[in-house]
Image (cartoon, rainbow, N blue to C red; front, side, top):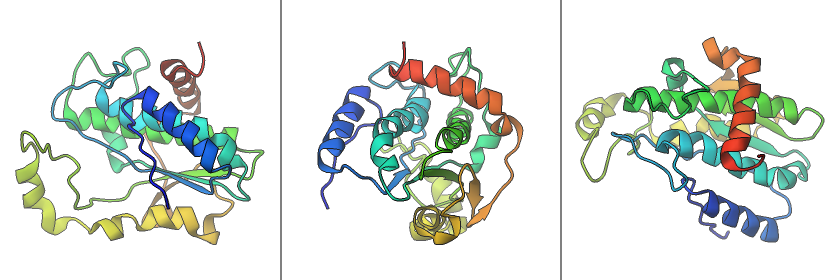
Amino acid sequence: MYPYVCDLASFTSIHACAEALKTHLPVIDILINNAGIITPKKQYTADGLEMMMGVNHFGHFLLTNLLLGQIKAAPQGRIVVVSSGAYKIGKINLHDLDGTESFTPWRNYGHSKLANLLFTKELSLRLHHSNATVNALHPGAVSTSLGVDRHTGFGKKVHQLLRPFFQSPAKGADTALYLAESPEVQHVSGGYFYKRRIQEVKGQADNEELSKQLWAMSERKVGLTV
């Protein structure tokens, strides 16, 4: 196993990583888009995007698209998108995708997680005539450092208070691994899962037209189209 460095907050880094992977891995069986951040205040990626939307959505969007050829080359390529139940507090405003009009950590995080589901919906349609599938999931409340700022300590007390109610990282990864490996979901695509069960999505997450519009805007934002 060889590690490949990829900074999802930098399109340059994503392109470099994708090129390295294309050189060494002509076939990719499984891609799990699991990186995610919560920032206590507004920050920006190297390309000027709000950090949470930039990493949680645009970074994964670009990397996945750059690797689609290798994923489709697999006998049954699988893409797994780690979203969150926080999508329910998110809202996609195509005229203010970065949330510049207002910023609150959890609401903007919800925007990015909603974007994950819309990305999954549209990508599933685009993979329809291939052997590849894509599914999203909510991992549940997991005891990790997500939401804790290592410089300011933001979120640390809340995390310590709620830790007894959190599940372990291993349990939190269960549904992602299920979607990546299980023959039970070999032909399932475009689903949203929690605890290995498919869930109904609500609100904007069920808007097919919005998913197409977000896809087109995302292509422009990451430079895949003009």
